[in-house]
Length: 81
Image (cartoon, rainbow, N blue to C red; front, side, top):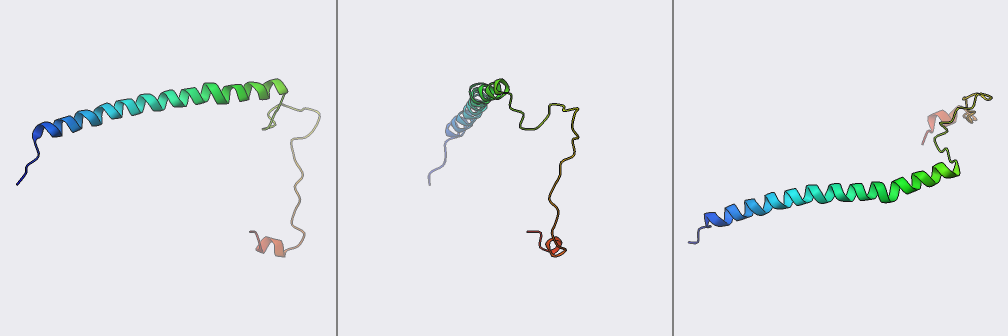
């Protein structure tokens, strides 16, 4: 009967540890590249265009309340979806 060699087990542990370290490094590099090469230019372009998608700029002349259309009948409260 064949028995596994102990050296092979040590080699597998070394490979697993190496791949774990490489995985952590590569994932951080990819995330940083995505942040600086995709999100940052888009955010700068939006800022230059004056886009305020979240409406965070204060507007003292008007109220912050927004009108919403209500239900037209009582049955719409029972049929929500």
